[in-house]
Every structure is written in structure tokens, then in C-alpha cells.
Image (cartoon, rainbow, N blue to C red):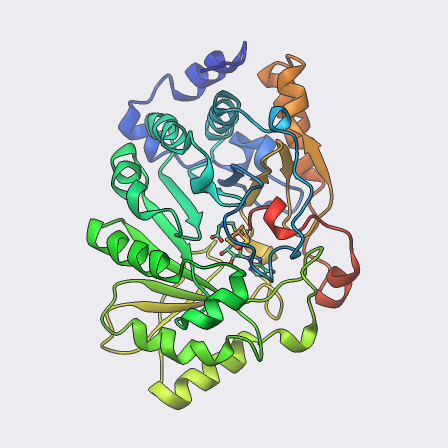
Length: 362
Ligand code: SAM
Ligand code: SF4
């Protein structure tokens, strides 16, 4: 693995007095993680890394039908670059990494990346997750589990095959269902289903998904439809999470509110007596910017401090120009300190330039 000239020193300094087990439990105060703490005191300990811009589906809410211009292969982060950046962020207090895309399972070195990240668990990383459409997951799941993957988010917007093909512009519904079943059988720490809800398209599926949690130990998360370049977002297609709670309670009775973790984007609930849970990601009607702890690295190596912000800094270019770890941290810290207090609100966001979602990674 490529190692920055001074990174080993930083790691020795940070962890010299700690056994690996103690390092795992390490909590960083803002003064100890200055590069990843913004001007509003938010500490960023969750990194989302996009592995690819490619995808085997063409979801309507994520990308335009004609596709998106792809970055040439040699401009995408390599396995080593991904692992080096991951190690740098873990040295600064990142405890959770999620791999996304595009579709991360189309990347041939996925298992190597997860194995490499797994080694960072001795340096403070606590959890490795992946967000996937589940199409090509089933054959890889056992190996991913063995390599150290802890949690799985599988995207599925409908339990109706025909609607699946309309929303994703591709076939593969049975593969996704099979992946979800296999994931729960394998005993991952957490299996979540991500469902983007669009009015007049799949909002009639919400009650079916809630029923699905009766016998399935998954969390189904209903995500408010967000505006990105090329996805023809329209406010009328957004179903506010409160409306969904009302609809669900009308059919299933009063939901039990569960306790959410401080940085959780999901408001979690449960139908009393059901095995699984449900959750709402209300990015548009009730944002969670105040507790945001997430940073993103795009497949072409840019750090993005906000899903909805267009400010980006290319870490890839710095890596390839031989910047030291100290110089990289300087620029990462500068980007983090520019993070805004909150996103601009949905009407404003809809008219702003941003990448299409497929080029960010969610
Ligand atoms: N291909 C993988 C998948 O679909 O799970 C990972 C990448 S995808 C961009 C990450 C997540 O973003 C998915 O759960 C997807 O449903 C969600 N997503 C994509 N476009 C969205 C939008 N416009 N609004 C809300 N969520 C969106
Ligand atoms: Fe592909 Fe995921 Fe986007 Fe769908 S949401 S087009 S599966 S990247």
C-alpha cells in the first residue's frame, strides 16, 4: 500500500500509548481532530467513499436516461490511493467508512478494498459498510462478509417487478430480493433497505414495505426524493416524511418511536411486534445538517464536505503530485472549515449546479 512519508509518524504519535483494542474505543475531542472539525464544532468521523461512476442500473431519480460522462479510468482513484486516503482519515478520527458509487459491486477490486479497510480496524476504524443496488451482490456476499464488511444498505424502491423495471430502467428485481434474503441469513450486523419515495410512482409501495418488516429483520428506510443534476426533480413528486408516518399509522396503528443515535440521519420507528424496523430520511423537509458528521470522497478523488455543496478539492491530484500527509491534511482541513451550517433548502437546491447523484454516491 502507498504510505505517505509522514503518516506512519502521525499514527505512531496518535496510537503509541494505545493497544489496538484501546485504539478502537478512542474518542476524539475537537482539539484532537482539528482537521476534521468544522467552524460549527461538527466533528466528522464518517467517511463515504465512492468507488466507481459506473452502474448496472439507470435509476430515474439518480441519473439521466442517456447516462453521464464518465471520468477516464486513469483519473479514478486506485485501490492503493483509496486505502491510503482511508488510513489518513482514520488517523484523524474517522470510525465509520461506507463504500458507495455508482454501483460499488461492479468494481473488480472490491474485496481487496474491504480487506485493506479491515486492517484499519486495528487503527481505530469501527465499521465498514456498503450501499449497493444488490443486483450483482449474491455471489459476492460471503466473500465480502469474510473480508470484514459489517453492514449492508441495499436499495430497493418497490416490491413490484414491473415498477422496478420502470424506476431502474433495467431488469433484476429477483436478484435484489435474493441478495436481501441472503444478507439477513448471513447475519450481517445491519441490513437496511433504502427506498426513495416518489409521489405517483412508488409511494403506494410504502405500506407493502412496512408489511415486509413483519417477518424480516431488516430496516426499511424511506428516503425523501432529493434534487440533483439530471434527475428532473419536482417538488410535487416529493412525499414529506410526516405524510408517510400518517399513512402508515392509519393502516398499522401507532408506531413505536425508537431511539436514534446522535448523528443518525434516520428517524427510526417500529410496528409493535414486527421483527424489522422502518425509518425516514427527511433530508428535504426536516434536514439533519446540525449533526452532520459525514465527508465524501468521489470516485475521481475529490473531497466533498456536503452532499449539496459544489465545492470540491482534488485529493487525487495532491496524491499524484507527491504531497505529504501533512500537506493533504492542511487542504482537507481547509475544505472542512468551509462547510456551511446547513444546505440551502429544496427550492434553491433544485436550481443549483451539483453533480448528478450517481457521481456523488449518496
Ligand atoms: N448504486 C448503489 C445503490 O443504489 O444503492 C449506491 C449508490 S446510490 C447513488 C446511493 C443511494 O442514493 C441509494 O440508496 C439511492 O437510492 C440514493 N439516491 C439516489 N438518488 C437519489 C435522490 N435523488 N434522492 C434520494 N436518494 C437518492
Ligand atoms: Fe445506480 Fe444506485 Fe444510481 Fe440506481 S441509485 S442508478 S443503482 S448508482
